[in-house]
Figure: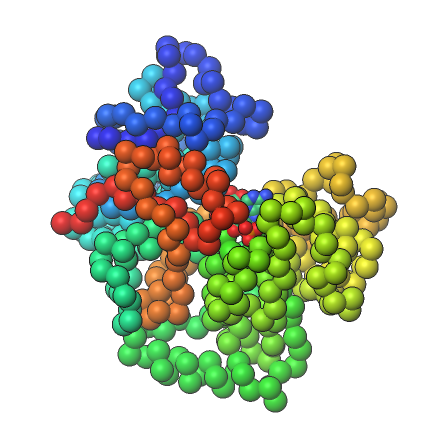
Amino acid sequence: MNAVHLPPLLNSGDKPRFSFPSSAPEPSDLQLSCCPMPIYTARKTVPSTPSDGTRTEPTYLVKVLTTSPTRHELTWQETLLPERFTTIKGPIPCHDVVGQVVAVNGEFSESPTFSIGDCVFGLIDFDRDGAAAEYTIVKESEIAQIPARPEGWEGGQKEWEEMLATVPLSALTAWQALFRYGELQEPLIPASTSNIEETTRSISKTGPDSTLIKRSINVLITGAAGGVGLLTIQLLNIARCSQVGVRVNITAICSKRHAATVKQLGADHVLTYDANAPSNQFESMFAPDTTYDLILDLVGPSLLTKLLNLYHASCSFLNPLTGKIVSIAAPLDISTPAFPSMNAKEIQNLQSRFKFFVVKPDAGQLGKIGALIAVGQIRGFVDRVFPLEQGKEAMEECERRGRKAAGKVVIRVGLSE
Ligand SMILES: NC(=O)c1ccc[n+]([C@@H]2O[C@H](COP(=O)([O-])OP(=O)(O)OC[C@H]3O[C@@H](n4cnc5c(N)ncnc54)[C@H](OP(=O)(O)O)[C@@H]3O)[C@@H](O)[C@H]2O)c1
């Protein structure tokens, strides 16, 4: 099969050319070649025989229809695990997958959920090969059935599969940031299009009725127009209707060109900067008395440190009682030169409110995300589509486009049958 991957080892026993964190590859290191079909060789989690009593789960060989690269993924620790480099190939990137099941390995499992021919979408764990290849292996816990197209979807099935490729990693990251680490209440999930009206009615009983509002929560989202940001805003906009007795205010930070999109998706306030100019005017963006209960850092230290400097200057920036910061970009690094000069107690306080996490595949959450997509409540955004043969160019565009367009780069691999 054709696959896009990092370079193989020249000789078995060689050390890989790339390693985490000091020697990361560039998108230009990716190459396309004809590789053997994938064989599932799970480490640790799924044993090769069921005799040790460990839970086993079905795995599926999937013909890839579409996938999507993520900015910085070639530099991640899981990508650069030495055992992922062999003399045949290095790691295959792109962990979002939309595909069609072509074989089921349910040997050690009671009943696989999916059958040959089913179309699924999912997030492949980062320590295995991704979907920049004609075929890939997925575990049952990583996938859900692809949602049906909602009324009003203007494209065809092809565009639908391309849009869906932008969803799993970004939406699961947004979901886990908001509802797991941010501890907000999950949105109500409509079971079908037919009960969307009922769901909306029950939502309106709690959401917009101002007499029931007992308190407000202010959420600040950085990188709001990125792949994760656009889904975070949409999910939070839906979820805030089901926060009983709580009004959720959404403030988004993005560059000027994305402000209208971000506002349209549900942000109450959009704070903008010029992406081409040094963004050092944050002080003037915030009202002096604003305090945030939850800051979602989707960009990393280049922006977060500026915000923390603000926090330091005006301690009310982060709610002193409930405020927390959830980051998907980087752990808190208090050794950076621009880090605010806090005393040990302040640093300890900040560390206790800061959580960096890496998204985990979750079929249950993906099923809920799919249900919201099927009724048109959330969607992904496609920036540009490349064929598999241009996987390297797709990854280059993904790294570049962070500051250009809203939405994600997609790779079209195959067509559904
Ligand atoms: N921990 C996890 O589980 C996890 C999961 C997914 C992604 N990530 C990471 O989270 C980050 C965001 O992911 P994403 O998929 O949303 O990325 P993306 O689509 O490239 O979006 C990043 C956004 O950040 C903004 N930005 C601010 N400063 C930037 C800079 N110096 N360079 C480029 N963009 C900048 C850009 O918006 P403006 O142009 O409006 O400034 C852009 O829309 C990436 O670093 C990614 O690797 C982590």
